Image 1 (spheres, rainbow, N blue to C red):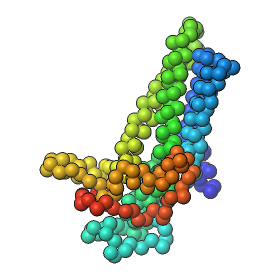
Image 2: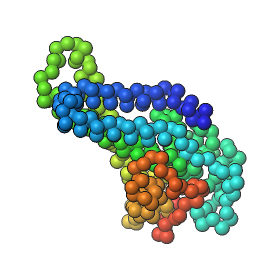
Image 3: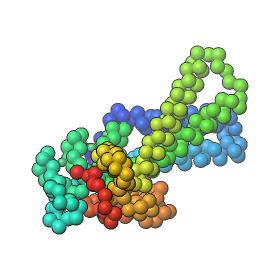
Image 4: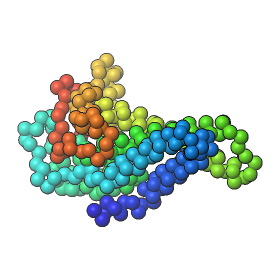
Length: 275
Ligand SMILES: [Zn+2]
Ligand SMILES: [Zn+2]
């Protein structure tokens, strides 16, 4: 646990927490207050909605940072009849000197194999893998919504009132706020779109990179590429977010997760990107 808590001391993680604090303070106490007034009903309603988004963003961020994405269990042994190896060599990690399950990959930063590894993220100081992909998605979703909401409030507040742009410090402050909200909206909006694509196709970022050539070859030969773990949109969502739709956006609800060493494969024949 000490190592997990130590992640909060890394500069990128501290920067994320500071950014959330900065955006929250300016949006609620400056722009909503300026635009509607926090003492009014509409002002309070906007402040409450934005506070909820900011809370969910921070909470799911903490869960993603603190949750172990999953390492290969010491008891793991590949089954000789494992259909997922599809006649290929068993997956062996030279660095860990052990077999690795399907979809697990070695992370050079974490110095171990991570189950269903998506990528190593410096902003959370942790790998995104099997056990923390759900809180990661929930965090990106709320960060995107909060950033876009903040940008809209900022623009509405600026347009709706006569502001004093004469002072140099005022100018710098408004340029800084505009830059931060636009940059965050673009970054989280595109990141969310990317992960919705991966989520609905049951792909990881690593698997997508490996599948690019297979997709190109399939397209060239007039065939449709099919990812072996793609079970259809609804089943893919259930596998990652859980069977209870009411808990899909609760980052800490992880009762549906299993060992993370086996994954159902689609019956449709396709090319296998995982290696
Ligand atoms: Zn390894
Ligand atoms: Zn890692």
